[in-house]
Length: 435
Image (cartoon, rainbow, N blue to C red):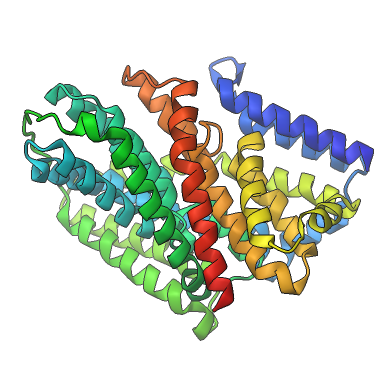
């Protein structure tokens, strides 16, 4: 047990430091992120030293059940690809520009429109893609209108990481935790809708109180035009996304696994958009960029973390943690600790760890523990800039845009919004558990 636990702690610290300082290994002109390289090396060490049973690892990777990590990865990458494709077509930039135009000279109107738009888009797409697209656009707009961008970029960030809980596809942590525990699409939204709304109302109210003085000042908008060059491809992308969401909702009733639905959806988009683009004699670059922009580094990262956590499971660590976390209020315990662990090691490795801990939770506590862990994996991102990949990417964008928002600034504002939102969501979950 000591060996496996030591490797896990070293890995967690390595992930934390590499995330915080964006550490990379340079080999000539190639730069490899230590974020995924550290767990990859740790997993190799465990396998080589016998710290984890290699046959068990192989059995997990080749199993035909829904908790196969490869199937979970396919589901995540396919749904992310649909969002990235819409971004490459220019849909999100066009929509962001439309929202900014609609606000006119009112910062308050822009604040509420931005929160609502970000929330709705995140529900049906991906919080990472929304943050990557909207943040630079908001920074550019604020600079152009000579207003402080902080109220708007922080509002967008909070909305994206709150409403990413609503559907299973909103965040990779939702996909991993829910799928590993065999939670279906419809079952998921039936429970998580109310906690998400509670957290959303709480965060919106606090954000408005936080920024109300700055939002009272008028702004002088300089309108810009954003056009979509390939409208047939946009129609294809939106139609397939809508169809995929419907199919995911009914997948458990018709006996089709979610990863198959998402993979087929992305395949349809690739084929249909290629045909449409060639027919118009336009460039295939958006399609190529979609594939190139996918978070491929998560493949070795997630698989390596799975091996590391499996070693903890085999030596009894996760069973011990499950016994320690189970008490009279399992939702509160798992919700708060998962948010804390997300900020100690990032929310993706936390989700891999908790997926194994949940395997040892008693049947009477399991439902509350699953959904509370999902809540913590999403709202934990609001507490510090290292709680989620979305936070790390968001912070790096601000640096490139010369927007000053320090670690301390994030923590001060993040705790004011994140802690009440976390408890509001857990409260909503408690209500759902009583129904």
